[in-house]
Image (cartoon, rainbow over all chains, first blue to last red; front, side):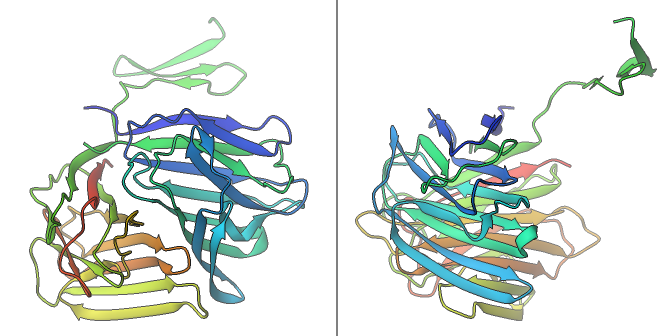
Amino acid sequence: MPSTYDKIQTTTLGSSTQFITFSGIPATYTDLVLIFQCTGASVNMNWDIRVGNGTVDSGSNYSATYLVGGSGGASSNRTSNQNTLRLGFSAFIQSSGGVFTAITQIMNYANTTTNKTVISRDGNANQDVVEAAVGLWRSTSAIDIITMGDFGGATMAAGTTATLYGIKAA
Amino acid sequence: MHWLKYLYRDRRLIVMVPLNLGIVASSMRGVTNSYESIQTVTVGAGGQTTISFTTIPGTYKHLQLRGIALSASAGAVVYANYNSDTGANYARHRLVGAGGNPPNAFGASGQTTFSIFGDLTGTAATPSPAGVVMDVLDYTNTNKLTTTRIFCGADRNGSGEVELISSLWNNTAAVTRIDLTIGGSVSSFAQYTQFALYGIKG
């Protein structure tokens, strides 16, 4: 039986770093799953990703819709025409610590006929926030590179981990 | 390796324990896949009214259905039925974020089907699909009703929604078949829709 759920790449930061990039992602899977955990940052920062083919797209081609909950109630938000895909919207990475965790599904990432849809769940209990998001990258290019972090200059703390998995349909 | 203590059961090495350092390794009888692809359906040109997964084997603990879905216009709803049961045997609860506040929550019982996504993206020159991950938990257990959880969403750069859904099939039968249909504003899935069913071993 061929393997259907494989680890593609993993990174653990040995020192404070602005970005984690997974490049050369093979097109042989159906979906990607990204698991990210960050324990702190140089300053409070949102968790953003950019994707692309060969190089990441920094154009205004990203948008997202959010569902957010905490002890203060529930809310929903939306962004459009952004130059990053912000998956950590209300739950962000804190300079004071607290674990930010996300599991992100990048659906049908290698097809060249549709825009790319991402569904993601994240939270930071230290902030009393949990959220779900759907994101869109308006491009029909296959995704073979993902960069995550803060595009404003903040850095993620040592010990931050990111692992990319591939799921292969028969 | 003299500092390792070897533990055996039925003449099989089960663990190596360093005398002062705690467990450093345990034996494995051979790595097997716990997540397997069962069946994939891709919709071609002309569309498709129903996507069916038939003869689902009972050899897994859970099922996971993953896919992208497209329709000819926005507002389409994707429904699911188990084992061709179209009786009023389904209940569902949905939590929906559509960019406005407060978010919406819906519940219904005595339904003839359950929705796995409530607002599909319409096709365009470059279509923006909905993404869906659906878990059918303990699907072969005949001692309890079947619970399904769904995480899905579609964004259209200024519209769209993200949903968390739970559903109940009021039947203790093992799930052997899943049918997906589409309703609301359209009657068929559009080209490039793709759903893949996976089995997860217990």
